[in-house]
Length: 272
Length: 356
Picture 1 (cartoon, each protein chain N blue to C red):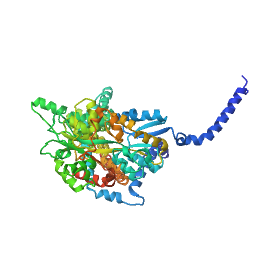
Picture 2: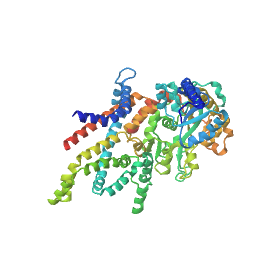
Picture 3: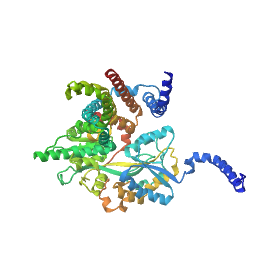
Picture 4: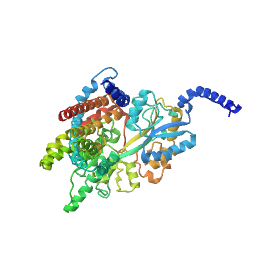
């Protein structure tokens, strides 16, 4: 017991110290800024909670984040499943393909999407050519555009934890099921899917939490109704220099993130 | 070899001791680089991309040649960073390239050093400085931009009244996602005469905005989008800027055009940060930037209007074609001081209005 504790400290200590220095201290300062002006006051929070602007963008943020996470999960799961069945060398090659979009700047990708999804974009002109008359599907400057852009960014974050989870499943289980005559669908629903729940929960919670802070993609691909919390933080930080309000939003987002993470850990424990 | 001290070694050891002592004495100098380099160095924070290369070529290089002061150019003026520098007492920037609203809020919050009025002859300035701590650098012009192929002359709005008239000029509009500029455009459209615009009639402006809202496809966050929306046929009439349209045409690609029938003109200021480490050099830099010759050189490249009127005749004919005539009553100069007092509250209302 004693020994594992010392060992744990040895392994984790440096990382903990680093996090304390570069994360906890500034975070403490943000908390302080949200509460003192210059005396203790909850003004920043009460102002926010009574503001329609805050309420609407909080709601939008949660809607967009959850939708983006679910869509990423639906798209990423088959990819992870396929990768898990490949021999290691092929898997490494495919993994590079999954990570490719990762290495392009979000800003560049968002502008690229305007070329693909726009009125005269690739998809609309191709459809018009096939059908023989002008087709204009509204795919940009609305929620659809935001979700496409965010999903493109998030899929790698879904594939990685899912793949780890799928690879951890004992292959003997699958073989045993096959021997006993189970069809692939049955194997998937009674073995693979239940055993990959921890990976699903991890992927879902990570991508939801990441989405909460999105800024560039909603601004470029979204419509008037897709304002997210991060845009509001920017407004208070840089335009009005109201750092009390900006800090308060930051703390509220942090609380939401902590709640999601706790819930995810609980679900994973129950599933395991 | 016997390890005996040769004379040369002795000397070198003595030298080492001596230089160590000198170094110790010099420590305060090392730790106070600001004082040591006080008059031959300064940090200028300005915008990136072609803007920066224009300013470097037209202003910074001549300044360095004339004064011997080295200018370090840093990207992106950000008032939040100025505030942080003031709060921590660790001022790293000297001269700040401030768009109107930033300049005015900085002035309100006491971020800038007062400037010596002898620095510029106010008769020469096209717009008088609103405060003692802001030096007008140039004015930029905002107005209606369009694609001349889709909307030849007579088919596109030429002023804000026509831009807000969706019946006569049907089409998709864009405006900025901030209340400044947008509210002025709405009020001018509703018929308020330019010289009587301020103080802005907020309710009247919002009523006008209500009417145009269904025709607005996007409230634009980033300036380049005011052009790309037109090029990609996502919008028909976009609130954009003359200098942006000019540089877009120069670069090739889908050409867009800009109507000079009516313009909203914003000021760009130069300001010196309070407690700037190289204050003296910074003041020299601001004074130099306001001289007619430098103004002409920079504005030829930037495509904006010089704050110094004497620079105008020195500019190229091509560049002058892209400048609005500020003496016409329909061309309005934004009142930054009015916005410094009203922006926070009104922009919150505007953002709420957008999503409601």
